[in-house]
Structures are given as C-alpha cells and as structure tokens.
Image 1 (cartoon, rainbow, N blue to C red):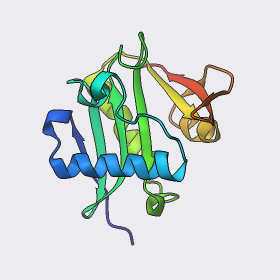
Image 2: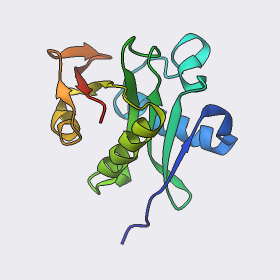
Image 3: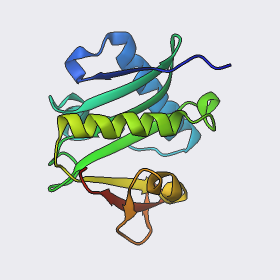
Length: 159
C-alpha cells in the first residue's frame, strides 16, 4: 500500500532550499524532459510568479519524495480577472493512483481559504479536460497550442 501523501502549502519565503530544489526538479522532469517543452519555467520578470508573496506552492510528499506539485497565482499574475492554478505536475510513479484528484481538492480548498470569492482560470492540456471537469471547471476556449501541446482555457466559479 502506498504511503499517505503529506501536503504542504507554502509561499516562496517559507520554502526550504530542498523543497525549492524538489519542486523545480519535478517541474523540469515533467514539463521540460518528459514533454519536451523548452520554455522559461521561471516565468514572469526574474521568476516573479514563483516568488510573488501571494503565490501558494502546494507540495505533496510521499515519504521524502516530492510526487505532486502545483502553484496558485493571485489575480493579475496570469489573468487580470482570475486567480490561476498552474504547473500541475505528478511524478511518473504517482500517476493513476488518485494523487492528482487529491491534490486538486487540496488546491481548491486553498483557493477558497486564500482567495475567497475569486473565480479560477487555467490553461489545461486538452487531454485532461475530463479531469478538470470533475473538479468543476468548464471549457471556455477552442483548442490552442502552448509549447506545441494542445491546450484549452477553463474556468471555475468561486464557491
């Protein structure tokens, strides 16, 4: 039986060096290496999105290994009128185990606590449409390419 996931929600200044290393490694492993997307992962001017004081980093550890990660961005960081969830990544060994659904449930609760009454917008990989729909997101755009991968815009109204 898999070890229970330990969830940690932190702003940038609360991340240890090891946690920062772990989350950057997971993002690079999934998005740059596995999906062959060569893009500036440390986005915004000088990586400001990760370091913004309202950005929430959600880390899911199984024992000592980071197996799940996402970040929540305040309104104005990605979209002018919505908060955003992005950089959603599950380590290969954690896929298909329900970790992704557990993480999204955690993320939506964090959104409710930290950004009450704010609607959420995401840029979702098109093949994950049903996954996000299970969490209350609705498709709001036609397919578009982002880093060569089909994506769709999706939104979710505040609870």
